[in-house]
Amino acid sequence: MTTAHPATPATPATPSHATTTATTATPATSRLRSLVAEIRETVNRGLPPEPTASMVAEKLLPHLGRPDLLTAGQCEGDSAHYRQHVLHAEHDGSFSLVALVWLPGQSTPVHDHVSWCVTGVHRGEEHERRYRLVPHGMTARLVATEDVVNPAGTVAAFAPPGDIHLVRNAGTGEAVSLHVYGADIARLGTSVRRVYDLPADR
Image 1 (cartoon, helix red, strand yellow):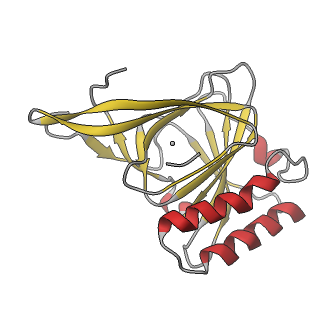
Image 2: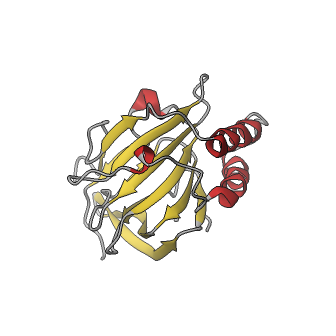
């Protein structure tokens, strides 16, 4: 990342894991359309995952925090768990743009991803714990490598492997983040490849 069981160390994710997914029907703002066009131009260069993610992060950064980026409907949360709004899925499946909305106390499980990913905090603050997977006898365990606080305006880019983390809203207000994935999230329903239920050092 740049600035994040004995027989079954991880389980494949399903679209229903601890989140609500909505494909937004709200028309995209002019700024959001511009961002999608910038991402498309970058992805279409056909570079490897890591440089693609880094370049997409550069495109996302100037748009974060701008009041004309998202509509009110695209920032709606869910009292039960964090909510995912699919803002755009490219017709060829090459990338998707989603907004994740977190109310105080909401969290992901420990997970990794189906593709390269770029995250940017649009509003509020996100707390992230990053892990690595290490052998432990006949099984494996998670070792926390870094705790990161991501305030508004923070971007991060990463590509598998080495992308295991947990994200939560540890603050008292709502948090909204933009995520770009190199996959069709409208079709898959989630960016999560595996959820890890393993012993961890902390």
